[in-house]
Length: 129
Length: 236
Image (tube, rainbow over all chains, first blue to last red; front, side, top):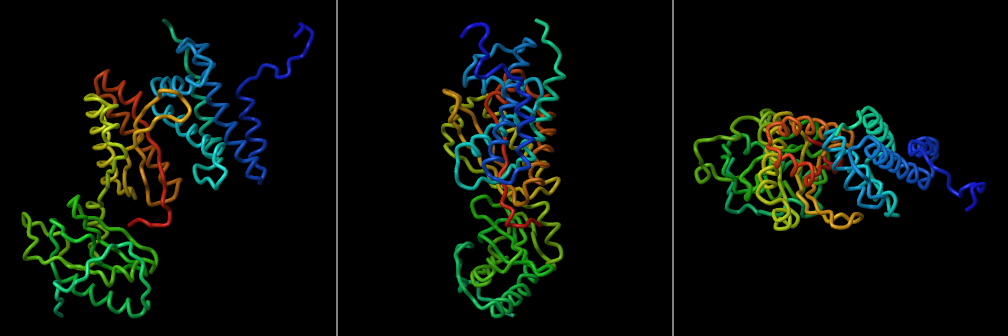
């Protein structure tokens, strides 16, 4: 890729995934709602991972191990919001991998919990070594 | 009225049967009258006993042999009643006395209050050996403390908590991540169960403050919570 080429996937602010999730959440099709739930989780996870890294709380691996790392760090720093992030991931796996009916939590719960975690992570101060 | 308990047929509560509703209702009331005149002791031998009717619903007191616990739940439909009515088993007061504790001794109206203090919370393990092996001594202690908190808050605030499943989980997504999941199974809608989970978070927060650093680490790293709901069964 030359310096003048536009990347196929430009850099992303993970919160944009949450905006997208809200946008498609009002569509009635299950594929839209499942995608919204999935993106709500990824907005939360990626934003938390990046912020915790930037603020000096962790050094992300940049792979699947970060799911564990982020959950445990959030439990350490934000108490049971870390458990809520864990529940979001469980539900994301359900709506993404199961093609049969999937019950609660609702999409509203996913969106609300995503907002709550993201806002709390934003408020974390930088970690002083 | 005399009921010969020796002839009582003791069947599984969930065994399906079809019986005429009116016939069953009559038999049900008959049994209720008997139940209201006897003492039932805490040392339960029956799996359940029908004890009351309220607002068209049926209150069933379950007496679990293994747990020696007694509890009540409201069955909101006739669905389970035929089996219950036929399989009624009334323990003999003479044979079931334990420390003079009378559980039900008056009318059925006392049941909701009794149920509040006596609702059984079943604790089940999936792969108990793996759970205990993963947790180690510190973690087992923490799990015990967590379960105590769950039971206390559930009884004190009358949660419609049906059971707690303790599961060993090897994460399907993250390699080498093992943990213990406490799945709280509620007999209510999701929103109510979720509210109760958040109440539990507060209590666990209080517990965390009393734990050593190692124990806090075990709680943080290895114990997770989630809920499941069975909204079809309404709680008392």
